[in-house]
Length: 138
Image 1 (cartoon, helix red, strand yellow):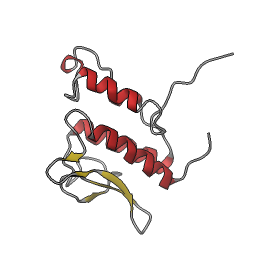
Image 2: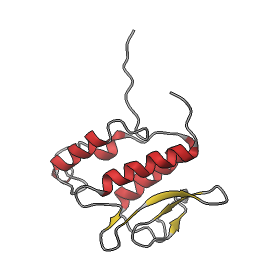
Image 3: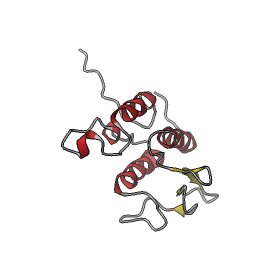
Image 4: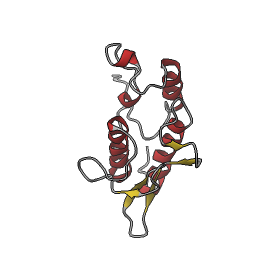
């Protein structure tokens, strides 16, 4: 695998956000305006996340609850991990998208429905953002 640039990783992270936004409860998508959240690199070279609802640029490298972020804790963790991916190429865990154990919200942590989450996992199967288990072959 070739080393990707920060700009290429922004494209991959935004594609992942788009996949999430077009399914289920449409997280990262503001239905009234038609806007979808995305990562941007500022003119100064800093990575920022533009929230779909507030339309504010957010410094996602900061610890704690982000001002102007309209999502909940599950989405903040996903965006935080995507920030690490864009910044240094560290892929995110596939576990963000389940499948989840039955004791966790009946296996539907996102409230997307089990079939929709399976569809999302399939759509993200080849995403460069997500870490994949390597085959242990001798």
